[in-house]
Length: 361
Image 1 (cartoon, helix red, strand yellow):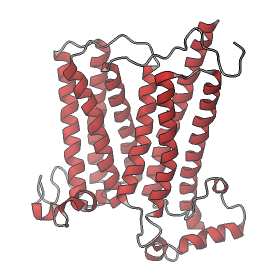
Image 2 (image 1 turned 180 degrees about the vertical axis):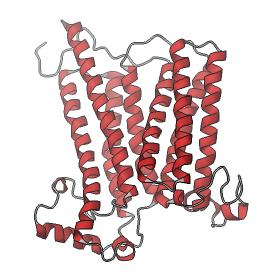
Image 3 (image 1 turned 90 degrees about the vertical axis):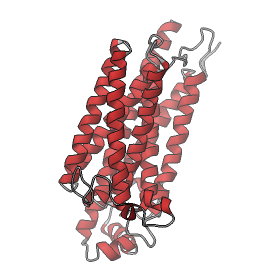
Image 4 (image 1 turned 120 degrees about the vertical axis):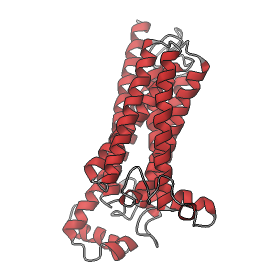
């Protein structure tokens, strides 16, 4: 009976984490649409509880609109906007925030239930607590991002936007890794260099996601819409890449530099994925690991093609969101490949003599 109960608990935990991961992926896409439609500053207050409800009366809508009129984005970009037009951007941002609240509840309530049952403990419990803490931090980071666009600026800080996105995807990646750890598997016999390459692919993917968020935040995809040349050459002139002082500001604020580093990281990621796939076959790694490397390479290649098309067509929203969706696929496959090659060290079964909380011994 104890074995059956533990098996059911693990199946329930896997289903729960799959749902949470799916919701996070959806939220990333809704966040991307919110950014592309310039909707992120339409709600100028952070009300974690009462903000769950949208305006329910005409007066409430008027008050929300008046709040938006007080910020620079309306005054400098959207002066003359009608209430009906405001409602369109409001619903995008409200949906994004509501989805964040839903994810919080979908994670917290089952987590408390599993804790009460004694179904999570040891390494699994620590990992789930860490994911919970990162989720709580994400809410604060989201408001920190929005607050950057309420005074003086007409949009949120691209650095804070990138931080917000990468943290969301870090939570997503942690859930994907944990899900894969919950499935039994043999210890990988792959050489250490393959593990290092797989881990490096995850790191480079995160770097590329960060640069992509900077590109989105600066609207840098709407300029230099040529490929493979950028600003007339494959490698732009140094004076254009590094004109801001101090030099490091160009990495975050210079639209040419930001787009260039996004392109170069894409090339590096593609080459690294191709090398990893070739090296997996040369080393005679397991069939599943080789398939994983090939799938990752295919996804990175598709993502590169989508990125080029999005740039050449000057960022149509459907292509931009598809590009973002495939980025999530690339991250998922990179994490799964790294996990598959990593040592299996997280025991998950509850000990035979464990007594669930709230039940007699």
